[in-house]
Image (cartoon, rainbow, N blue to C red; front, top):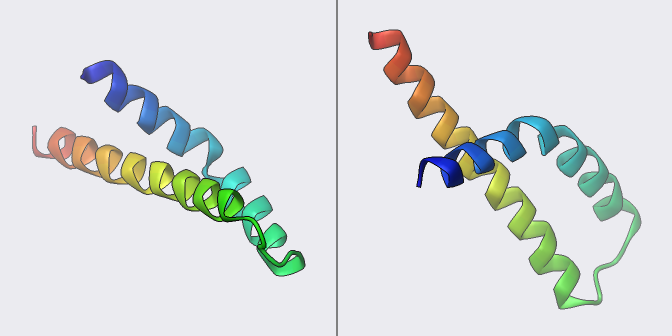
Length: 65
């Protein structure tokens, strides 16, 4: 379980900017006609959001110690 949390946190910290910047540029220039693209885009953003939440909780605990 700790490895999974670490992996998601690592992905969110290292890939958030590429996911969002490239994803939003792609959203502005492309009309989604394929549901797979929409699901993949949402999945990547959900992974990043979960990683932010995990890291926030971890840093909150670290500050309290």
